[in-house]
Image 1 (cartoon, rainbow, N blue to C red):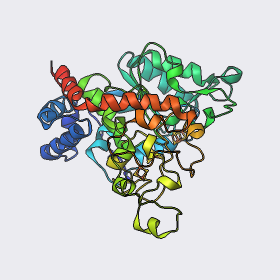
Image 2 (spheres, rainbow, N blue to C red):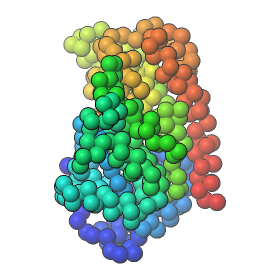
Image 3 (cartoon, rainbow, N blue to C red):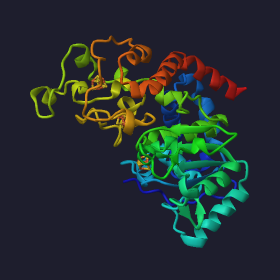
Length: 374
Ligand code: SF4
Ligand code: SF4
Ligand code: F3S
């Protein structure tokens, strides 16, 4: 597990100066910026601009509130196996409130939240994990005697940007699945008047969180989003269209049971329930555990955890999606939509939009970088 370096951030110090104090060379920093540009879909031409913006940053404030959730998203973001400069960037922001990660508790913790919001009003980044239970006046999640809704509305008011991490904050997740006894909703249903970036997944990939925060810090605004509020640089492409088992799918080579010869050969998991054909996520590219593996790579079907309502629309998880076998590589979500389950129709329409938008992602990303430069 990565252990943060305790070197403090001096008053007025920039990120570049602090990284130098930590022994991070200019070359290593530029390599990180190059990787970040690639993740964001930008040409290497923009690396100097990213480096310039990041190294001149003064310590930005992040407030991370946790509502109706399991803490898995916090674990996902902090549990990387090796220190990267991405970790250091997140270390070096001023994480002014996170009730899992901070030493304070009780009144001291809640006072830290109030002080951070007051001191950084209008400039802090609000990160939220967890859904908001609205039933019974919100009694299903309270912190310090206040409901999740009250806490969220107050914290969102002074935020420069709002980032929802995980399926719970995105749309409510399992607690919002049928019959949703606590009236759980995603934070986008509560926050009005400002966009919410949804880093989808249960949990999402830490690198996408790092890249989204770094994008905001570099360009001063959130990245382009799809209709679900997910950053297009990460969620613009279906898993099925990036999957290393796609050749097996196209060749009709399918696992029929988890212990059969096809499973041992690593063939396509479509017939044992893979939802990759209707799931938009960068899992095959970013992967997990220092980019060593991911669910499909480990032989388990994708259950569609980056998609809204996946507990209701993607189940049974080991049941085969109806009628998508045989479409070619250029299949769009529109085409798939005709064959998929009726319950998932709304999500498929969203995918069609996202697929179309993705095709112009590169052009948009370049324009975005240009705007940031102007
Ligand atoms: Fe836990 Fe998943 Fe919710 Fe994250 S999205 S808090 S991992 S249930
Ligand atoms: Fe990969 Fe699943 Fe598509 Fe097969 S069905 S190619 S395992 S995403
Ligand atoms: Fe989730 Fe599927 Fe990726 S289950 S972690 S979107 S492979």
